[in-house]
Image 1: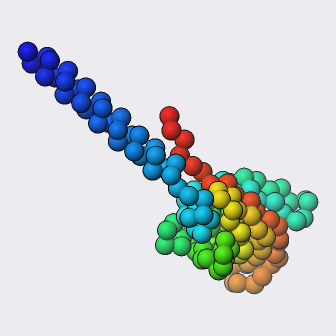
Image 2 (image 1 turned 60 degrees about the vertical axis):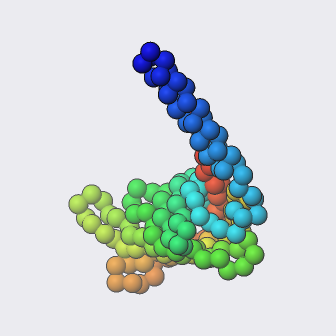
Length: 160
């Protein structure tokens, strides 16, 4: 007799878990494109293309928080992730600024820092726009700057 009760409980638990998972999947798929277009919140794969063809771009992850924070990985192991802010500046338009540090050869420490500024236009689960990166010496002297464009693809939930 206890086995029947255990089986019933397991059956009800299975139904409950299935219902909860279905609800969660429906919630994720029910997001409207227009809501997403007015925020940069989420995880993104960002493709960086420099205007100077000598510089090699890359695709790298970025994470944007609800309160306007950003963590952006660079293309080179010699630079730290960038930390900064994003802000909505218009309809589907966002300003982004983040900073990080540059590392020298192992054992030499920091060699300078960088600042990236971009203006992005969001359309659904993608964004694109121009950027400017400035590289500074440790004393704050501007060493050089580079320009280019970025495109981003939002990383969505992929149910198993």
